[in-house]
Image (tube, rainbow, N blue to C red; front, side, top):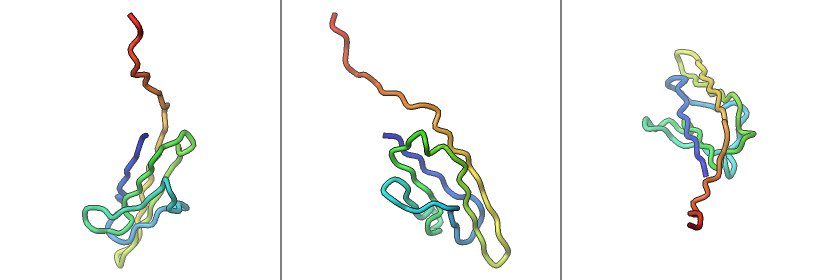
Length: 85
């Protein structure tokens, strides 16, 4: 199982992820600074999770956004069985 964690670095303020709802694979956690929902966690990564993910932050000074492209290159299965000699 592959898990990805990405901290939204748009800036100080309330971070909002674009068009992503929490479910059994997409979760949102607080970051080290206590900003609620600033870290997106994808568990059981699938090929179709490849996409641009954008978060927004806003406070009294203005707004900012940050985008990351998550690429799922390939997923290999490891066969840990040893061949018969």
